[in-house]
Length: 229
Image 1: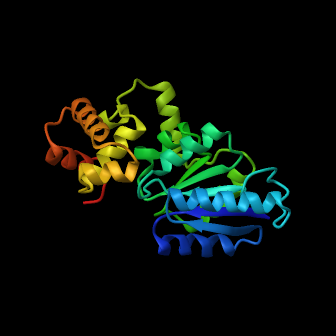
Image 2: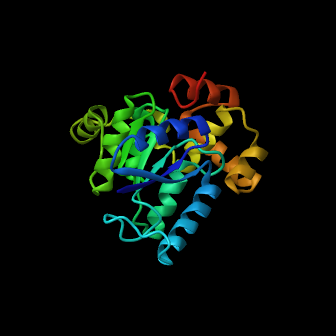
């Protein structure tokens, strides 16, 4: 039985994914979280329960709270990319499948580089998530044909990157939050940073993208599909 944790801030999205996975005879959703804090608490609780023998792990899971973590990129506060980096730094055995509303060309390669085992767009066929979870649970990478093509092109063609691909993960997160209408003070609180640090990230983003202010930054983000219109 493949044990899965869902992390998405939209309860309806979680329900849809849970129902899709629950229809598969070899999968079981063992927990859900809406943000980074809830996820960390849930993972600690499940890991402790497994260590105590109250919830014996599945055959494929040697340690950790689950086999696969289905993770959204756009979480309140610390993003899905932050979760990926944290798990990677901890040496966690949990395999992460990113399921996002953002198109592959915006976040897929960045997520895979951060440690994700796969990337699926929420707008696709729900059965792709089932297939992806099975693949990832076996320790194999899951990529769509579109992502595979992007990977091939990145190896064989000259680099013609969008300017935002040069941003660090934290700079990209700052860009998205500002373009979503968040104030610097709100961003600082959400990311557990000082307002001064967020201002530095904002300045770096404006410089790297060749923009002058938040209005131009927002237009850039919308045109490049980083936020909804």
